[in-house]
Length: 233
Image 1 (cartoon, one colour):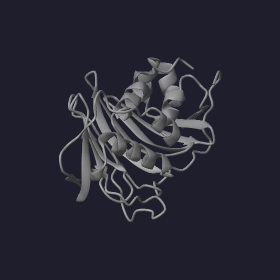
Image 2: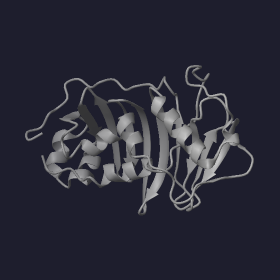
Image 3: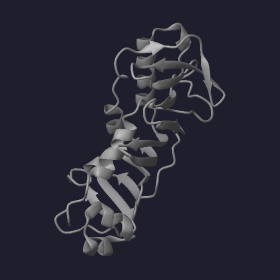
Image 4: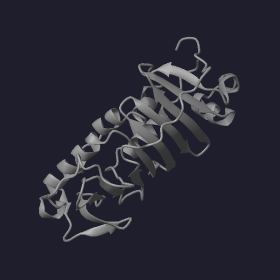
């Protein structure tokens, strides 16, 4: 198979490397709840609590977009350790993605495949069919990172430069939140009480944002059947 262009997956990963966001739906798991309000803690403590809460979450749903060097990238994905999937889009490309049992499955139409592979024959061959490859495949490894919560969380680093906790509290989707701001002006909204999930993240430079929902109950896509494994994969 013609080498798959990695720009698409790399752009999506760059989007997900924004400070993370999360919106919880439904009751907070009592086993994960914390008692101390986050607004009583330092910025560093709030950041540490938020990342730890995300790691403890068994699954979550991610919806976000960002402008990557003039290209708008959108993701709509469910994630859990080693299992997940959904859709990724950029202009001219719409791709469905499933990760399960160490296998990455992708599906796209002919137009999308042509943009990714620059090969008309390949695009015609695989259009609208599920293609499978192990997560170790160099052309598909980047896609796997978009659906595996463990790998995704491993890419999350502390906000750039000094972290500042803005005075008082704000709200996000009706929920009381603490707001952290990094040196670039990016803002991160974190639940003030209960489990300190990240409620929203906004990029000051590109206008990009991420939201997370369905903690512990994110819907996982079905594992494709009769997927095509191409020679050399």
